[in-house]
Amino acid sequence: MEKRDWIILQTVYEEKNITKAAERLFIAQPTLTYRLQQIEKEFNIKILNRGRRGVEFTQQGEYLVTYAKDMLRQLKIMEENLWNIGDHIHGTIRLCVSRAFALYKLPCG
Image 1 (cartoon, rainbow, N blue to C red):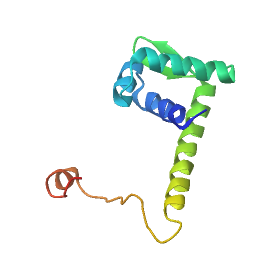
Image 2 (image 1 turned 90 degrees about the vertical axis):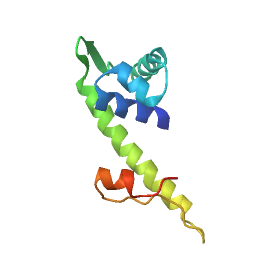
Image 3 (image 1 turned 180 degrees about the vertical axis):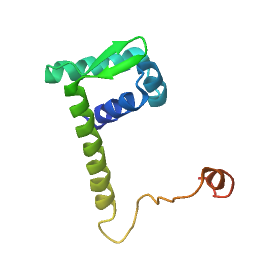
Image 4 (image 1 turned 60 degrees about the vertical axis):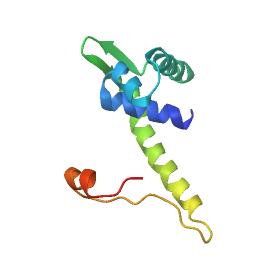
């Protein structure tokens, strides 16, 4: 599996809706469905069940999503460590501020 597959799983899990997840990921819904089917085929398991109110993850799907979250966290740590080897520091600054302050007081870009 690739990084985008981990992101797909996490996004579908958060949205509980394939169409909304596709919109959030900026991909077509059929493309997202195809990727989910390919992941199911790769592991020979059923990841989710579709219903009228969205999707529900199977037990195997829940495990895969938990693993995906961990993998994405580990990838981010690895990327930041690689960026910071040497003299040039690169990364992300995370601030804990209210949404109103962030939107109107912090500079963009």
